[in-house]
Length: 144
Image 1: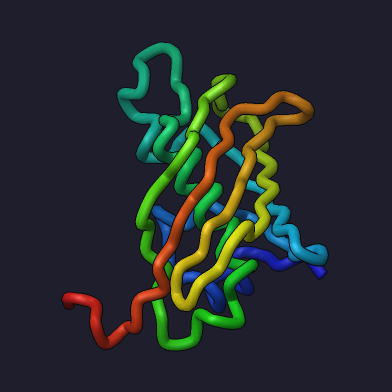
Image 2: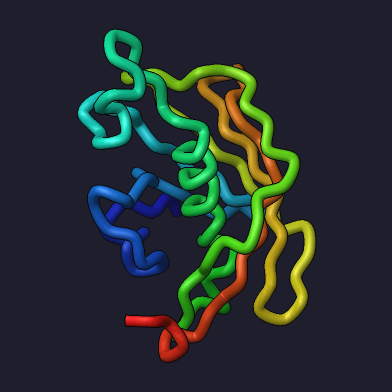
């Protein structure tokens, strides 16, 4: 079953304007999600004047948030924190009006550390790919 934004908020801690997933579903060992770039997002303001392009770091964040469905059984009382982005490649621009489709898969898991391969596409066009690593940090250890 495909989850909407309200259901996604029950899994991940992100909220507007940093919630960058509109829908997600887990099919077996894969996560699939979508984010529609409206054009009014804060990260497009000034990047770049006259030619708004979704920044690569935002594409990585979209992939990261999309991956959280894969670790949801481990998330209670914890927050997923990036520990690294390896082999990140940016192949094609993402523009206002595009719908970013994410596919992700856990490639290794040791204790609270997860390694996930992810790809972002617009249609059949590969826009970004990389290996993301996360540490699930107990909420009581977060600096508040």
